[in-house]
Image (cartoon, rainbow, N blue to C red; front, side, top):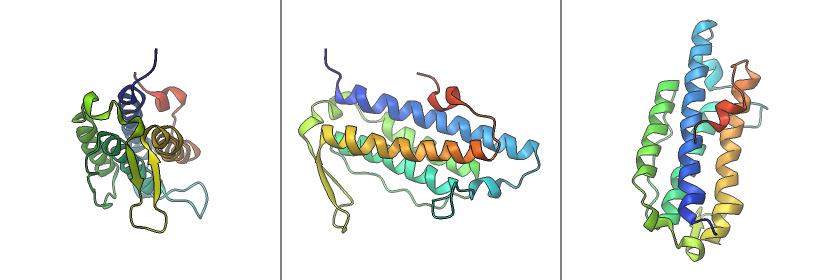
Length: 169
């Protein structure tokens, strides 16, 4: 039996975004309990040339809505990158989940050969077919940024583990 494009994408995006939301909640509690300015965690990075936590979450959100939209053949909603607090990042994740929840299986299924363009019109423009985009670019990119956000928080002492990353499914 084969797996549908919807089953291979949307449920995983939801699961990991919900996990990211919960991890951010634990990070905020960690900062509060230890009297750490939340901005310290929000601006933390693994290395000076890497994006800080806040940007990792924004990019993860962008990737999730981009994957769902491109596979469904609808426009990718644009969110301003203005978040400065844990609550604002969690609101962004909620908005992303609202968008993804509106995507129906029939919009995504059959998108294996759909033409997908990312970074359209830029020097970085890439063209894929749907299945290649999902498996080789979209999901790896999404998971990279969520993993990096997790690693930043774990590196800064937030008590999270693999179960927090994987979340509920």
